[in-house]
Length: 325
Image (cartoon, rainbow, N blue to C red; front, side, top):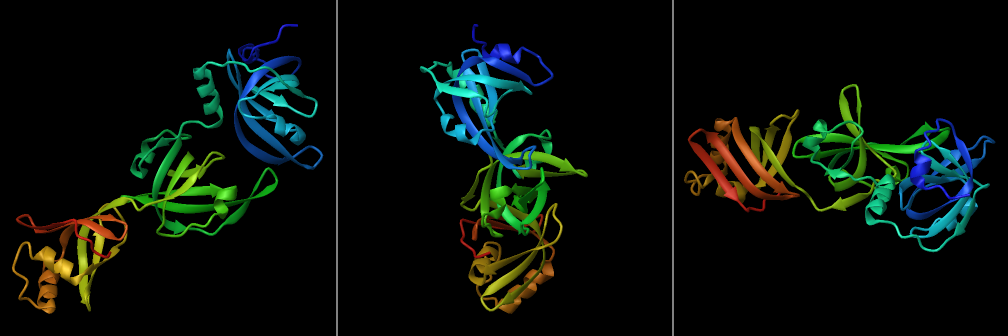
């Protein structure tokens, strides 16, 4: 009996699981995650997900026989017999025969498509752009942790599964990211900057959020450049530092900045003579001008640029100054 190609199996259009006794020859392209589940006998079992391909196209495959998992090696060509075609996938079990075959040459385009079946593209988006993306999109984002909830446990297919939700912020845009399984147990701290790949975009009660997937990776990265725009609502001088209370634009609450006295004097000095003024006189002068605009660009704790706008005709700008904020 002639072997069937993967495209022929896809074209079978069977709505029910269909056993196939004949063989297929395919190349293992990309191994995916191993899912743990409880079988019909109440026993813990594993299911390996991977992609395969022949010269007609790619396909997803699964294997529930743990003893056969070592045979599934990326790049290896296999002959597979006694499997089930289910839901557009090749489902293999303990009854499936898996043996090696000579190398099967596969077109590069098919290999790429097979890889994407396991590792789909993850488009990098700014947090402000996420609200415009279609639901169920796979996205990569980055930002600073501003909220870090405790790990909790939920039931998934009868198994206790740990999850944790963190909140990321990037240039005043925020989003909750729920981390599942092993990712929820990693150490993260408020203030750290993360880059997170392969997140699934969901929405609940009109609020969008991201969930990690089996393909998600998390990398701690260097601080991002952040712009702070708003109105100075209050300020005071304590020893050699200024405390500045800023109400940010399009954001609830306040952000407190701490600025070195000499640096703030230098900034104001661009517009008026302050070298002979006392700290108290400067404080009174600034307080009497409240509210006034502030526009700051920060990279972590460093202030890269600062602009103060007291009125339409009076503006102070300082660039490339390192202020402790």
